[in-house]
Length: 197
Image (cartoon, rainbow, N blue to C red; front, side, top):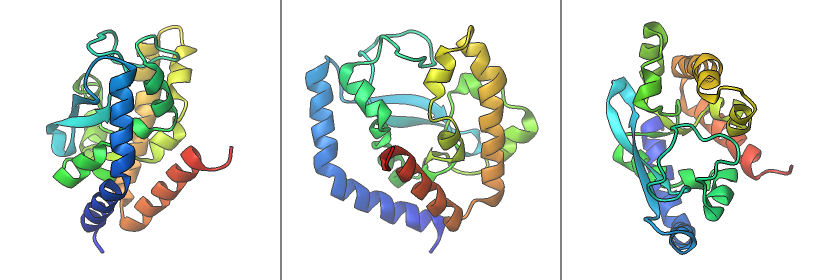
């Protein structure tokens, strides 16, 4: 089975099975704070092409502020804080997988402002595959918001330390991406988020 066919089958079945949960989360978000349940944002995809990513909204509608989420960001709603801890805000990206702009596993898509900091050689390698809902760098930086909160300058910490590490991870993934490696990443992600603590 090809990686793309697996993505399509998994995303379609997951959306069908999870539809009651997705509807419940959407209703909770709407009840918890004014604004839409879904949030869309421009990210950079395969080959450097921009696309609109889907997420459940976890911040106050039109809150503005910095692009990075640092620690206990006051913009995050009560529902949003819980959704972020379990990464459930990422579930609408199953729609992006069906559309073909994303994969289940692949380098996390960045904002254009951060892609501008990619060195040319690593940029080409990291953007050679579809971005994903999860990837090895997501597992390595599960507490990214906490790490940024501890930094004197979160933006600088992200650009100079975290982003290069994530980019190298993305390039390494792209060089050996396969259905087998994807299954391994999905299993590790499920264990990290839902396994015993």
